[in-house]
Structures are given as structure tokens and as C-alpha cells.
Length: 244
Image (cartoon, rainbow, N blue to C red; front, top):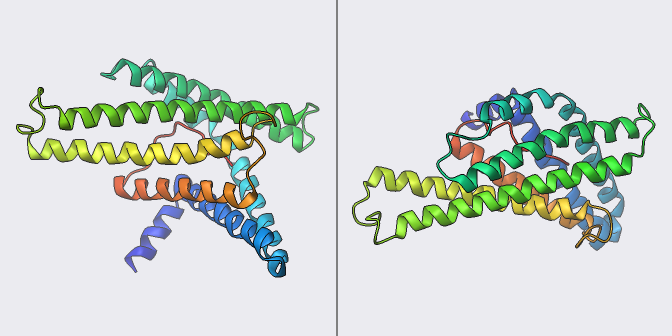
């Protein structure tokens, strides 16, 4: 009963509902892609699941029409990250926020072009929004990797007296923070693989993923994000578009 109450509470929030829609969408794509490719007898079921996945993705795209203000408030509050102790983390975060802020209007224009509201080439705007999302993820990967290395160094460095003299409570806090950064790193890497796949053909492995692999990468990313949010017991930051 407690689990049901927690689920209902999560679904009352925008972020919690978005995580569930995202996870369901990618799971449908994973299962649907496997059925279409590996089980011809059940290809019709697989095709229907792929349609459901596409509709859930479209639902999230429409909901993101209202994310610009939240992103702007977060970017304004973070500013130039003057409170950050590490200069590398600071500028990775600042550049990531800029990419995230630009992502939303580009995606909105692409959506409006598909809906025939604007008479522009939607493919170009989808490519631009995907490139911005990929850039944000790449910066996030660099930031998390740097943080993991720094935290590991602090925990293992014999010269800084972090190993033998570090208070147990502080050591646990550093270990918890490092695990959180590793979860973020894994989630961003899975999303980055999909972001490259959705770029125009000719860019690395763009367009080469079968539907089930896209679904797998997205499912892994979504589950890591859900687990991290459950562990933290708080909403994630507003930064970082969580795209299709």
C-alpha cells in the first residue's frame, strides 16, 4: 500500500509523471522493436507498441512547450556558478545550462512546423534541437566524470589524510555523492547514444540504431533516473531537457 501511495504521489507532480511516461514509452519501443525484428508472428503487436511509444513521445514534446520558464529561472539562479568550488564543474554547468535553454525554443519551432503552424523546415530545427541536447549531455558526461575522479581522489589520497582521518559521516557523504554522479554519468551516456542516433545521417552512428536498441538505451537511462530520484528523495534540478 505504501508503494501505491508513493506512486500516486509521484504522478501528482509534473516531473514524476514525465518520468513514468518516458519509461513506459521506451519500454514499449524496446519490446515492440524486439517483436517486430525477432518475432514475425507477433509483429502486429510490436507495431502497435511502437505506435504507443511514438504517441507517448509526442505527449512529452507537447508538455515541454511549458518548460522554458522553469529552465530560465534555474539558469538565472545558477548564473555563472560563482558558488562552485571547482572551475571546471562551474563552466561545464554554465555551458550546459545555455545549451538547455536554447534547446526548448528550437524544439518548439520544430513541433510547430510539424503541426503546420509555422512554414519552416522542421527537419533542420529537429536536428538543431537534438544537437543542443547532445551537447548538453556531453557536457554533463564531462562534468560527472570529472566529479567522480575528484571524489575518488579525495577518498583514496594518502597525502591529504582523507583515507585514515576523514570522519565516517563525511566519508559516507562523499561516497553517496560519488554514486549519484556515477548514476548521472550512466544515464547521460545512454541518452547521448540515442541523441547521436537521431542526428542527421553521416554523423558517427546516426540513424543506425534499430528501434529496440533505442528503446533499450532510453529504458536504461529512465530507470537510472528513477532510481536516483528515489534515492535522493527529492525532485531533480530543472536543468537539462529530458527529450524523446
